Image (cartoon, rainbow, N blue to C red; front, side, top):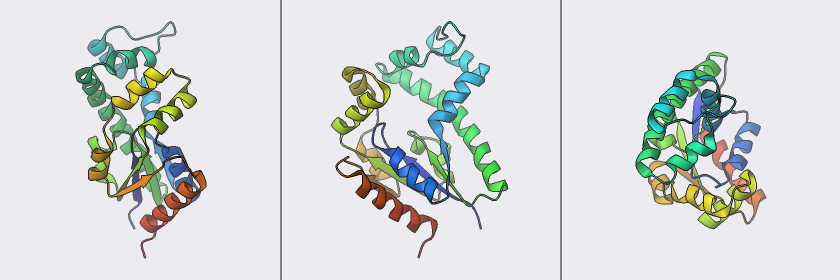
Length: 201
């Protein structure tokens, strides 16, 4: 039986972490595209060089790519954001495909890929199901500020730079709405959906 791959996507601050925790409890190996990308930024010299070709000097005193500086450049310029996404998605998708193959070769039966740009990447075609986690913009801004310690205007810039809910609703096979009112109810809703995907009746 082929390994089931569940793609989890949705805008930042929507509460994907809660959904992913439920998947882990159901035995899925979770691959976080952001983590993979950040590791590539630290370890893949060629990727760093390519980003500096596109956006100018980005390295800090330790020689690492300064992600806040990069964010400041791309979030206010849609064409630059698109350039970054193209380069980052290609590198990240290649690494994630390798990780998925290794998990399946090791006998893994279920994997989840958490990726904000899942639908725009080649990874979407590998997924058994794609699940969008959505939340109201104000809720997302509040969560981003609390999680990352950033000011409200920067959090709103992050939110406005992302795709709207309709994009995810049209592109995904399933939708979970996390308004933050009842975290336990949302977790239970997510678990029920994932069970149905992993073991269809």
